[in-house]
Amino acid sequence: MAVDAVIAKSTLPEHSSKTIHVTVNGVPRASTVDARTLLVSYLREHLTLTGTHIGCDTGHCGACTVLVDGKAVKSCMMLAVQTDGCEVRTVEGLEMAGKLHPVQEGFTKEHGLQCGYCTPGMMMTSVALLAKNPNPTEDEIRRGISGNLCRCTGYVNIVKAVQYAAKQMAAAPKGGP
Image (cartoon, rainbow, N blue to C red; front, side, top):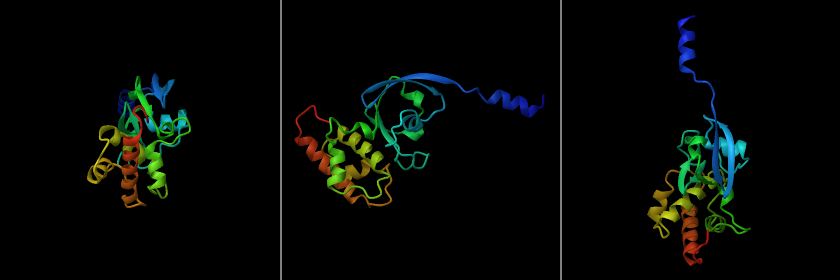
């Protein structure tokens, strides 16, 4: 056997699959996925939740941001198998019982989007920010969303949208979104 064939055979693992149990937007799921499947691909291709966008595939743009156990993560940088036993929330899971989440409402009322490509990731990052800091300053909002790129808005209305959401959430009865 040629040396190249021996090296290739020893370094290329066979494809392996794993069954994962994950709760996505409140719905328990059991899926068998290739161990190399990215979370963003699992959400978009296996579950047809296409609100999570693929932007850069390098973790720089934030368009693919989702919440995993309440933390904002870039789903293009996480394997689906890493979510086994976790709770994942996507932009599709923000609206509850026909009512927009305050962040979604804020993006609408404050014109926090233009082309909309970054919007799902920006919203999910904002939800995580407000869960940690329910009354952020403008500077804290800007720092909080700094891992998400928007090439259209200049961020002014995005910041206003998060401020709007913070006010709405503060005024809402406890146990809300």
